[in-house]
Image (cartoon, rainbow, N blue to C red; front, side, top):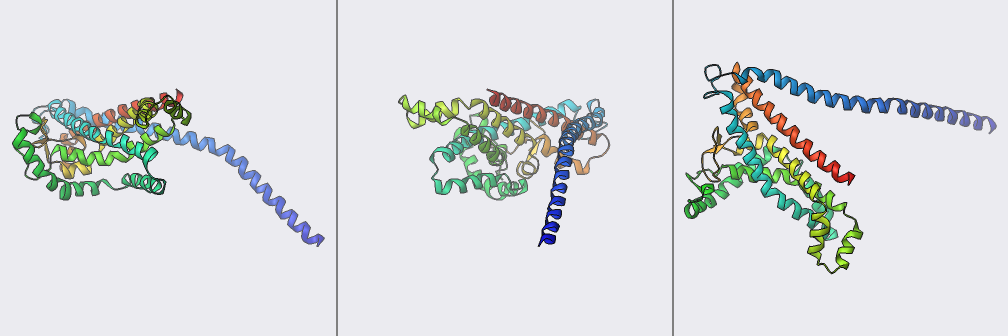
Length: 319
């Protein structure tokens, strides 16, 4: 028994020694690994930006004789694409923001406990669906279903520029694409708004109710008003996500390089991302530089928007 006990103690000491060495090694390499990952991310963004800038330089001075994508010069080619990107993303944000706030409030205050967890999973599940699925749904289900509504709007409200014709026969308009985008950005906005409302102290809600406020007034004052900066951050993140969407817009939006505010017309503005996806496979020479130049502007805009949202979230955490 003494011999067996000695063997067990020796093995335990060996195991503890290995664990101690592993912990010491972890304390040494983990900070280095974290710093290395941060450096790789920063330099990756810088290298992508430099690559786009260097590749884009010839396009800034190109004309239609050098690149057949251009009608005159690069800047006249760029502005309609910028307009289409912002117009579709802004419409998607206008549609998605009220739904995301309402859904977050419902999940937090009104959803029954039995289904609350399932609804949270369903909302998060929307974020995992590939964009091509949304695009196919937009073409085969949403566009044909909404096209008669466009006809009706044009018939009775044709005098409003937003509903001016000619009406699209397929329903593949900028409004249809924006509805698809709104569904795609809804999960991330709802998740962020839900986290913002969860940070509201329960004592603050109880204090508002104690002063005689109704349940809706409590939500409006304690959750929405105090979480305004977080809601703004979720909106900017959703806007950045909508600006960068490619496949769904390429499938749904029947766009061209023009500026149009109409929701129902068959002549729709295109977006930078969709334009790149459509033309890049056949691009050559200066046309490739032109597409890289549009990608550069999309890259810069996305970085700016995401930086603003991160700054707002950081400011809210500090306050």
